[in-house]
Amino acid sequence: MPESSSHKRAKGRAAGKSGRTEVPLRGGKKLDAKTRKTATEVERSGNPSLLEDAARRLKLSRAPRKVLQVPQKDMPKAAEAMKRVRVGGSVKSMTGTKRTSVRPRKR
Image 1 (tube, rainbow, N blue to C red):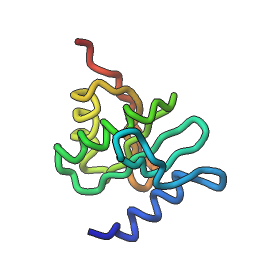
Image 2 (tube, rainbow, N blue to C red):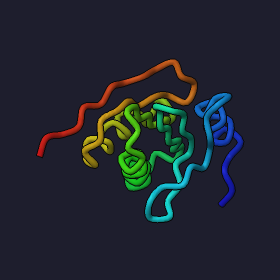
Image 3 (tube, rainbow, N blue to C red):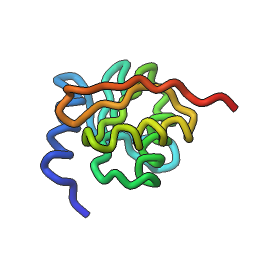
């Protein structure tokens, strides 16, 4: 299924001038956007399993700063998905007005 225009816009904004989109990861996966230090995944669906998949891609990126960008109503679900996958970073709203830090859950 093709990306929505809002997904493309958020991905391009996250990549910035010097960043890249559709960055290849190990295992044939692709990260939405990456700059030198920040890896960004955009997930608009709110589906818990898809949020976990996005968090796993962030974990694979091995970037020092990881951002999962979701609609504001899905921010708590996204934070929980990141904790389940045991990846730290931040959850950001699509508009960029809200941001929450996530600390990875201990084993």
